[in-house]
Amino acid sequence: MNENMFKIVLGCLLHDLGKMPGSQLNDEDHCKRGYDLLQKVGITDKDLLDQVLYHHNTDLFYHSNNESSLVYITETANDIVNRKTKLQQENQNQGDSSIRPLESIFNILNGNRQKYFYSVKTYTKERDINYP
Image (cartoon, rainbow, N blue to C red):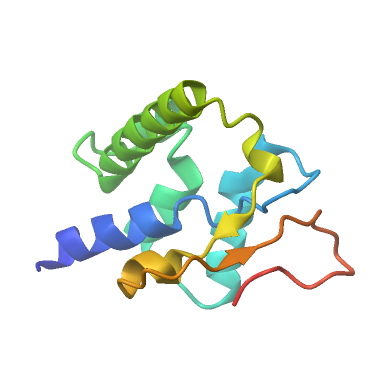
């Protein structure tokens, strides 16, 4: 896997890092929160940071950057997934996703057939984030 492919994969995995399940926080701010979180842990790669910060704001990004940037790939992938998820929810009549239990991504990554879930809780600064 070349460097750009690795950055695309990593950026697509981390682009919604700033979303907090069950959060009362404004969802429009999740791009900036994710960007800030990555910087806080020492991530300095501009391509990765841009994918997280601009994946919903490519108009802002376009004015000063190359159209072949990885941000456009991340934005497109995000749009495809969001459309597919919305259609699946409508077809399955699953209702509000903010109250469904969170399935661990490690089930998928490790090929587990077990169904581990985390209950959805409202994020507050006083409570730990609900993750493994």
